[in-house]
Length: 384
Image (cartoon, rainbow, N blue to C red; front, side, top):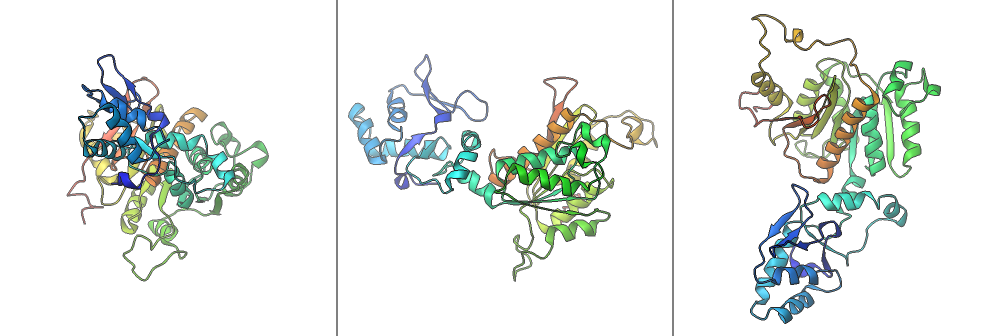
């Protein structure tokens, strides 16, 4: 918890601007589910407090201002209310210096307010999340449709270092959904063309890549740990090259199971996304927190009722083709969801409970896809 005393000029975040309801209560945080709250205010002093917290006063002057209108209160009452608002994520300090060069302040001047809006943790500066992104190292595997949109989102948002891995070359059939490539790129390695496009988007981000195929679990372990960052303590989470793995490849078939095991071993958070016809989903996993990928898969198998005959392969109910039918819309949605999930884990905004798969069904607006399961004690991957 951030102490109120360290604030120099506290104010309610502009996106959380309070207002009074018809019955005299105070609403803070707008009317968006997950952000806004309503505070009973029969004496009217909460309204006086939030009005005084406009960024023009220090904490002591705010207390004096409220006491001048509500003499029956105590300093402690007002200090506690300020602390509660701060702890709920509704307050920022306009006196804190912006810790980024002017160029980056301008570049991210539209994104930072959104992160500030969604942030429900006490922060002194709204630039906290942008700094977290700036320092982050992300490994992206697969840079086609889903991966390309995710890469664009991360680079545009200012992630510090993005390393892209893909073994394919650009083909004409890619161009209906893979945003990083042009007709002039046909026949080029995808990584080569993608890096060129991404570097032109944001020169402040370190973007690297390699044309490399993931053929077995060891390939993933080598990519994750590598040799760039080591410590004397081999159990430390810093004994790895990246802060997050973003999985956007769909081959080999077992690549997500391999990724799950490799990330559990390295204690590395990871996200994945994709599309299956009109279903678009993203998964969020943090070793030791909630279900792992295999926990979630097992829970999904137990939940669904395919009503197939004994011995029949489940593929009869949901056939797979050599390639996934997709448009720029399904690839774009999955990639944008993937970028959102990655930013959520890197910054903590919005806070996400790991062990989660969510998405949309384009056939039925309003029919969300949501799978959330506790960690399974019998899971062969994470039970240890």
